[in-house]
Length: 198
Image 1 (cartoon, rainbow, N blue to C red):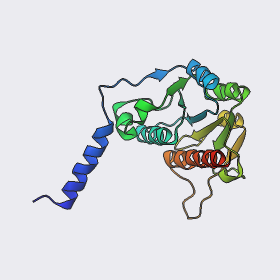
Image 2: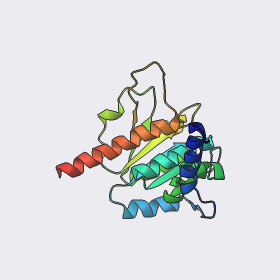
Image 3: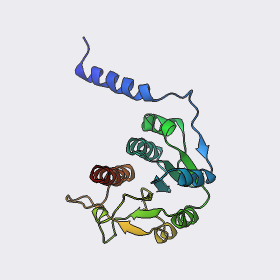
Image 4: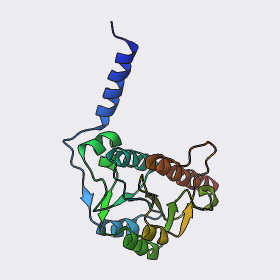
């Protein structure tokens, strides 16, 4: 007789494996890919991960980025997690569907895309303005810092603004992938509302 715990484990394995196929190749793009995205997409949405090192966090970020319709996930080439079988498994298809761009220097990339008309919103628990104070309906890049230290100083300085996620409980901050989900789906909500009004 099969226990309910066995059934749950079997269902979880089946669900994860349905999206995970190692035979598919996941492309890792150079920085130039961002130029083509910014030239062809009217209102791009980018997710910039400043030094995420945990492959589980990266996988979860890719999954939520895919769900939110992100045009590219941008990561540094060094001192950060990259695409691995673990990342792909956790991403449940997100790694195969989202453009993954590695850059040499995150602050320099942020400066460049700012000049191309992208609003850069960094997340910080020290920010004085809430996420919900910003208009995120135009070209936008969301920056999420590393698990341990948040955004690096130079990265923070290149952001157009910093936002906090309002917290009602006792925990002081959220996991990086959870933060990415909250912020990205606020962008989705705002853009949906704008589309309904126009």
